[in-house]
Each structure stands twice: as structure tokens, then as C-alpha cells.
Amino acid sequence: MNESKFLTVEKVDVTFPTPKGPLTVLESASFEVARGEVVALIGHSGCGKSTLLNVIAGLHTASRGGVILEGREVTAPGPDRAMVFQTHALLPWLSAYDNVRLAVDRVFGKTKTKAERHDWTVQHLELVHMAHAADRKPAEISGGMRQRVGIARALAMQPKVLLMDEPFGALDALTRAQLQDALLELHASLGMTVILVTHDVDEAVLLSDKVVMLTNGPNAHVGEVMSVPLARPRERLALAEDAAFTHCRAELLRFLHAAHPAKAA
Amino acid sequence: MAAVIQLVSGANIAPPAPTVPDRPLPAVTLSAPDTPPPAPRGPAWLRANGPDPRAQAFARQAIAALVGLLVLVALWSLLAANTRLPGPAATWVSAVELFSDPFYRNSPNDQGIGWNVLASLRRVGLGFGAAALVGIPLGFVIGRFRFLGDAAGPVISLLRPVSPLAWLPIGLLLFKSAEPSAIFAIFICSIWPMIINTASGVQQVPREYLDVARVLRLSEWTVFLRILLPSSLPQVLTGVRLSVGIAWLVIVAAEMLTGGVGIGFWVWDEWNNLNVEHILIAIFVIGAVGLLLEQALLLLARRLP
Image (tube, rainbow over all chains, first blue to last red; front, side, top):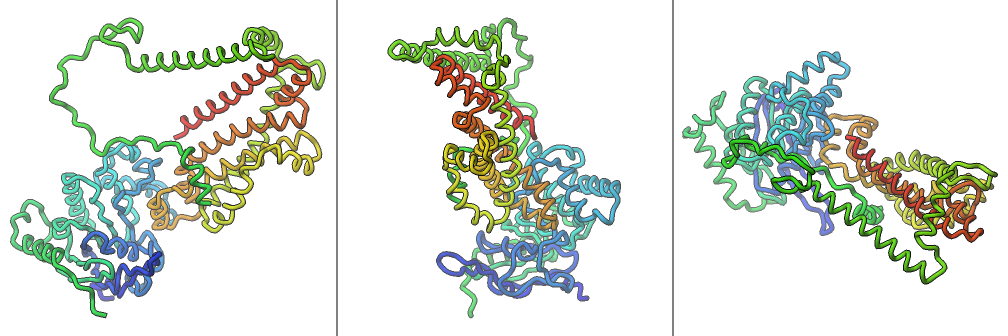
């Protein structure tokens, strides 16, 4: 199988019925993701990037076109495409440990023993440096910590692709930077495939191998795909003065600030 | 269904629990004192370094409550002086006599007030219990599946405003005797808040929790047990509290019409004996028991996670 086509988004159309008639949010959006790649999906607010991510996750069905993962079409949600939500979506009546354990029990209920599942859960909490707060409920930990637990839960499912919907959008700048570094660290050690929706240009260039730029909605489609040739492992402070980083960043800004006429029919 | 939900959700939703702010507060502030304040002595509301705000608030509330009750007693006395209604003094004397022996048993229709209250509570327990067993699961199903919710909506809206007194003849027709028909009236009147509030609770479960369930491919039963139930519990309990209130209201009315042992029947019987002091005492007893039931449920709601 062609490794560069680990996940393919193929001519995805998403149309919503509205009182004023059908609204086409996405029109013929297509791109490819290679195994182990981090792809950032960027665009203006309302361009449909979250919708596209939901289609990849299987939480929403495309009106036309589809998503193919490892040669098979995506038709329903599943733990192989684990999602990290913008608002952590941790169950508030469960502790951090129990939230992750819920996912682990579901995915590995038949393949791992109880003890193995416990170890697996603790391991993933340690990966995000949250093992010390494992017994606390979401209301008792900060926003950044909740998002870490959300990431731990997603990773604990051992997904084929990790989908992240503006995961750091609700956090302050310092916490955001910490979690971006955490994600870099995780990718360095686990090498998972990630699709990350963001509107933050710096985040997109810092974290990803490839940036997929969506035009403005409605009828949004993939405008440009830019590859980020920065070597890994990446270090934030060193990159701040790197010419390639600055160039990529400038390209993104140029794309986002340019006007985008509607695609010819 | 949406209209019905809106009707109750305005008044009946318990406020969300406050959460800890996103960032923990810094450990040291610039103006932190070097030494702790001296330990206070004396009664809470008269401490040397200022009165205790919590004790002050409590004292304020207690005084206000007392004033309210005194106003009630004053209005009552005023009314009693100008009509044939017995006044507080006469009622008190009668009450002392009544409560000196609350559990006597002379005959099936002449029993102590304690027995009457217990008989009514027993009927409430049965009727409300049945309503809970049917209403809460029904509420879950109606809230979870849109079609059922839309189907049930008009039926609920139609039946909900019906007075218990209109259901009693139906009960007598179906069950032929007074006792089960009173319990039926309680059942049919107190079930609605539990159905509606439970359904509302389920419909208000945040979409993300359900998205998590979809990504994990949780079974419908697991979704119910681990997501719907804990998330909608505050709303379910609000419904339960409202239902208990209605059940207690209904039993008094139902017993007046059906007779037997019970506080409602006792009220009607004392009216036939023209013992108005006893009726007024019954009013207080009914109110007190209703209040205790509600407080007990509030306490229970606070104890649950």
C-alpha cells in the first residue's frame, strides 16, 4: 500500500439544509496524509475546517465524496480515528483516570487484562504528565490539564489517526505553548499520524509537516497545500529565528489574507 | 414537546454547579500579611474584630422568618376576630390535646392523627413510587429518541393540566374501590414532572459527551448508564421533588372524596363535625409534612455526586 496515501480525503462535499435553501460548506475538498505525518488544516473561522474534521472522524457524513483510511472507506466514528475536542469533553463526574479508563476499557476490553488496562491508562496519563492528578475530577484541574487528559484519552485508544479540533484554542497563550511542546514531544516518541485543525499560523508551522489551507466558506475547498520542510525534533526557541520557519509562516499569512474568488464551476 | 420542555425548564432546572477557575491562583500575593490574624473569641456575631458575616446572614434570615410567621398569626387573629374562624389560641389548645395522643385507635374511622398522616404517606409512597418506576425510564426514552419525544409531546401536554379530581372517577371505574383509585390519582398526576424533567435532562446532555460515546462506539446501554444518567441526574431529581409535592397535594384532595383513613379524609370528617380547629391544625400538619418531604429530597440531592 502506498504509504503516502495512508488517509485520503477525496472530493468531499458537505451541504446543510437551511431554511433559506441548501448551504454548501465544503465543495470538493481533497488532500492526502502520509503515515506518521502531522497535517495542519488551516483557514478562516467558519470555512468548514471543523466540519471537514468531523467528516474524517465519521461524526458527520459527507454529501458527496468520502474519506479513505488504509484503503477502506470511513463510514462511522470509531476509536481508530480518536478525536481531541476543543472543549476537552471530559465527563465531569469521572476522574481523569476514569475518563481515560473508559476509553481503554472500551477499546481493549477483550484484548487486555484488567491489570494491563490499568497500566496502559496510567502510562498514558504519565505521557501527558498528568499521573499525579489522576484522581481529580475535571472541575478540580485547570483548562490545560483537562486538555492533556483529553489527549491522553485519545492516545490511549491507539488510534490510526489522531484528530485534533483546535485543541488549544480555549487556552491562554502560555498554556498553549506548553501543550504544543507536549504534542511535539509525543510525536517524537510515538510517531502517530495527526490531523490538526487550527487558526493559529505559528502553531501550524511549528507542529506540522504539511499545511492544508482551506479557502473561505461557503463552498470552501483546498486552496493550497504547503509542506513544512523543518527538521524534527523541533525546538521552539531555535525555530523562532529560523529563515525557513519565517518563510513558511509568511506564506500562510499571505494565503489567509488574500481574497479567494469562488472556484469556477 | 419543545413547548412543554420550555414550560418547565425555565423554572425547574437546578443551576449548574460552579467549577474551579481555569488557572490555579498564585501562592503568594503582594499584600499577604506576615502573621495570621488573632484567634477570635466570644459569640460568633459579636467577635472583637467584627461580626462574622455568615452568622449575621443566618441571624437575618431567622429574624425574617419569624417576622413572616408572626404576620401570618396576626392576620389569622384579625380574621378570627371578625369571622367564625377559630383564632390561634383556641387552635393551639386543640392541638395540644390532639398531639398528646397521636396514635390512638378507637375505630376504623376514628384514629389518632399520627395514623392518619401515616396512612396518607403510605398511599403517596405507593402512587409516587409507581409513577417514578414508570415515569423516569419513560423520560429517558422520550428524551433519547426524537420520534418518541415528538409522539409523546402532545399527549403529555394534553393530560398534564388535568386536575386530580377529574381522574378520580376514572380511578373508581377502573379499580372499583377507594384506596386504589386514590393511588391511581396520585400516579397519574405526579408522573408528569418526572417524565418531562428527565426528558429535558437527557436532551440537554452536551453534544460532546455523545460524540465521545460515538467515537468509542459505546453500546446504547453504556451510553445510558455512564453518560445520560449521571449527566441528567440533577434534572431527574428536580422532577422527583416536584412530583412528590404534587403527590402530597393530590392525596389530600383524593382522600376527601374517597374516604377511609388519611389526613384528607380527616379534614372532611372534621368539617362534618364542625370542628374547625382541627381543620386548621390539619392545614399546618399537611404543610409541615410537605415541607419535610421536600427538605428530605433536597438533602438527598445534595448528598449525591
